[in-house]
Length: 247
Image 1: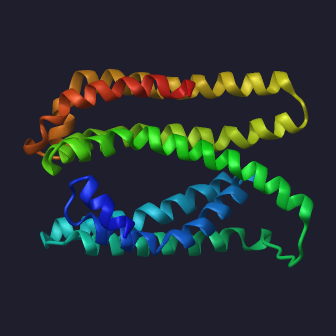
Image 2: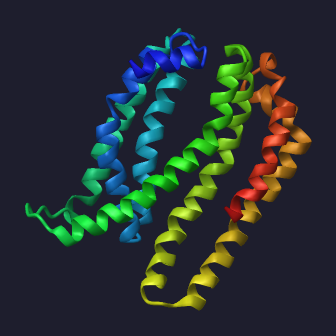
């Protein structure tokens, strides 16, 4: 019911079945996220890397296969392939952390309370982050045609390129900062923050300049001539990449 309502609200025909297909994999993604957090806690970034690759590489290979074979694929099939890729990632991440998993079936009121209070802040932070990063898509979907939304979304896909290294840096430095906070090492936290912002800025600033100068060739290479209207929108969005290290 909710999927059908979103399809009508966003004026996107065919969205409802895609949302229903994607929702099937969400319980498994909870396990995958839990495994990734364990890897971060143990500073096992090599395993973290392979767990991330296991989620994106199979899906990329499927798309490449269809592209080079010039066979057609509908969106429902694509959604199922994405689910299969996520299922593979869950298996890979479980295999990597299987030695860290210890199940104790018991009720601990203290830990349930601690996890609940920690979880509500994490949930709120992630929800606000998701809404702010996706609000433009919701508004565009409600106000514009699917074609116009697709053009704007092309610019968003280009911006995802810079989010990958920035998020990778954050996934490494955040647990280190948390460990320093537990030991009340304030100077160490300040040093980690300064290095993190510096590393991110050294990536985002060249990206911003690159997009300003070469937005049209970039859009043409990635999406084709039909989406050249996304170039001005991409230039505006690229400004956010400079600000993202300070978030």
